[in-house]
Length: 133
Image (cartoon, rainbow, N blue to C red; front, side, top):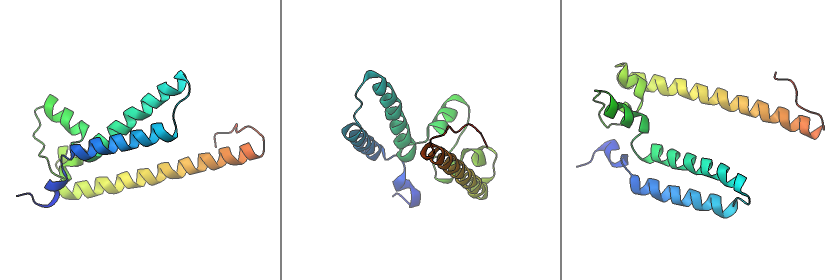
């Protein structure tokens, strides 16, 4: 009998379904016209596949580490936080790792927003964005 998180692991049919849906939407609405655009489309397709494989399947990093190194990482939700598992911090370490990762995500989003607002306002003023700060 499956308990708790077990029913959410190894959902490869959903990963394949989401890859097909996302790829169809991309190629349907944003179909590349020239061969140069197709190379970028291949890169985006690889990202879509990696995204859904990591989201619904077994994370690739853990899979490669457990097969290449003599590690025994159980297939559980909290062991998906690789550094907390490898360093032996357990569930508390996983929560701390997730909090630190969330801070980095927010900082990254703020930097992207700052950069795009700078580009937008310099483009509307018809002058080049030359400063980095």
